[in-house]
Amino acid sequence: MPNLVINNRAVEVAEGTSLLKAAREMGIEVPTLCHWEGVRPMNSCMLCVVREVKSGQLLPSCSTLVREGMEVETDGSEVCEARKEVLELLTSEHLGDCEAPCSHTCPASMNIPAMMRQIYTGDLDAAAFTVTNGLVFPWTLGYVCPAPCQNPCRRKQYDSTMQIRELHKAVAEKALKDNPELLECLPDTGKRVAIIGAGLAGMAAAWVLRKQGHACTVYEKESVAGGKLRRLPEKALPAAVLDTEIAWVARLGIDFFHDTEITEESLEPILESSDAVIVACKGVAKPGGKIFPAAEHKLAVRCVGNGKTAALWADRYLRSMDPRPKAAVFDSKAGKLAKTELETMRAVNENREAFPPAGTNGELADAREEAGRCLHCDCRKRSTCNLRRYASEYGVEKRKYTTTEERVYQVIGGDGDVIFEPGKCIKCGLCVEIARKHGEEIGLTFSGRGFDVEIKVPFGRALDQALQASAEECVAACPTAAISFRNKEDARNCHTALYTGK
Ligand code: SF4
Ligand code: SF4
Ligand code: SF4
Image (cartoon, rainbow, N blue to C red):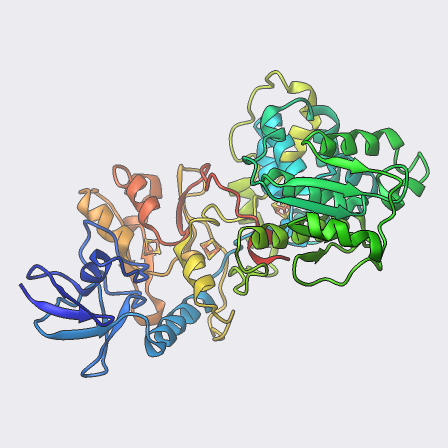
């Protein structure tokens, strides 16, 4: 039984143990992309490197067996730099969108493609949940938002933009009802937050913080909430629409004090009795400590975005975390696509499933038809992709290396259950091995050499034929979304704003 030292801790392990296994048995995390239990070490991603202290050599931990007297470190600066370099090489040649361009451009970061899928499949309760948590005021914004999200819409580049604003307006108008899930809040934390200003920014902050389990009190100098939107003519925004949505916010159990102007003096006792304060109006207090700004803005949807961000910072502060997370989540962006590439996307994603029969919520038939045009530009593994996870953790520089080869967006097996997006493949070879392990008759293979190597289905056969018994495991093992199921995606929404504070 060899003895070794990992990160200054002595350990004895069984003969034939890999450094990776030895480290993990000690609770030390070593990142990997191409390691999968039950498959021989692929030795291809090199993310799992560790440093042998005596020789100074960097070794792939998945394929290096422990030797008596070894001393290794798994997290020194040299190791981290080497891993970052690996990730920068991989991400430089990566072709895919982690998040859809529409969601990126929406100042409140609403998960637009999720809404499209929910409307299309007739799950209007889920759509109501998505639009309300995303926009807080989806009906009001259906009237007043200039829809910046519709500009970068890939469907616009193909033919005409998706009617995003009309769709969330229709969902809010027709499908918002007493849905208990929508009003659910996390258990009370015992923390109190004061929100100064009941414009959209203040109320959006109150919505998010109440949902996180904090008690919220909103102070407003006017006799009604709604801020500058109250000055719009009835034709531009019916007062009843705004009133209905403010009532929705209040129903979470938020206290409102109207006709209450907060000055520097009257802020003092509020500061004393609150665990955090959101300032959503001008000139009351400087941000810092437990005071977080939620600036009002001429664009109503940006007020919502600012309110959500301030609430995120305050929530982190109340949970004793660093209020402003430093590391941004890595976001791959495919950039502008050619018409032929958009045609590929359309063929795979338009009406992604057979048009479902109208159920009890069949009244939104037009909206469902429109939602079926969506190209679902977001990635199917946006919240579980290991490449994205490690690229975020190691703070990689995007597109550090320029690739000479012009990458073209492709999808293989577009009509079948399993699809393969070569632009997202890191050529780790796990799928090839897993298909072989399952005894697939056709399986997958490497084709080409060196930098030009690719994963291919041999003999020009279809992907569904190549991956039968092994499909499930290949999708699970693939460290990116290169191999995925056409109609399945991460259940969890990856809300960029929650990570980046954008
Ligand atoms: S495979 Fe990963 S890195 Fe690539 S687009 Fe999808 S989530 Fe982003
Ligand atoms: S096609 Fe759909 S997912 Fe893509 S940008 Fe437009 S609305 Fe968003
Ligand atoms: S498709 Fe295969 S080779 Fe490519 S990243 Fe996924 S598992 Fe690895």
